[in-house]
Structure formats: C-alpha cells, structure tokens
Length: 102
Image 1 (cartoon, rainbow, N blue to C red):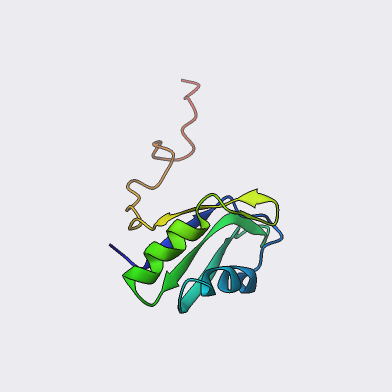
Image 2 (image 1 turned 60 degrees about the vertical axis):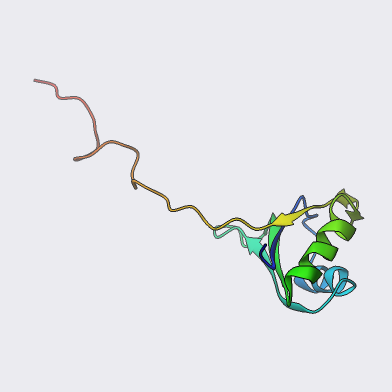
C-alpha cells in the first residue's frame, strides 16, 4: 500500500487548499497537488494527495471516494506509478512525411 493517492473528477474550481482541507480530516497531509494544463494553465480535473501514513491514506479513501466536493463525486484511490512513454513522434520519420512528386 502507498500513501500517495490519486484524486479524480475534481471541479475546476477546487484549489490545492480545498484538497488539503478535505483530506486533513483523515490525517496529516504532507502534499497536495492539482495537475494543471501546460498550455492554458487551468486545472485538469485531477490531482494527488500524499498522506503521512498508509493507514491515513486508507481512511481517506474510505471516507472520500464517491463523496461530493464542489458538486462532483470524487474518485480517490492509490496512485499508480507513472508509466514510461515510449516513442516520441507520430510514427513518421524524415522531413514531413509527404509523398514525392516523382
């Protein structure tokens, strides 16, 4: 079990302080992060909360998964490690991928 939690289905009005306050009822929050869109700098609707112990994380999952905050039912579960992205292009190499006229 991990003490880092994924929190999904967040309202775009939810702040990191709102997350911290909601999870603090279940133990000590060591970190609360909202994921932001790089191009618009607006929230993406999910984030991560790290509790100080695994037991507190379990309590937070039991207490907040499915609970409505800012009018949205939260999804709270143990965060999975980030998967490595492979590749890096659109699958086309070279210079533009256009067809030749000859």
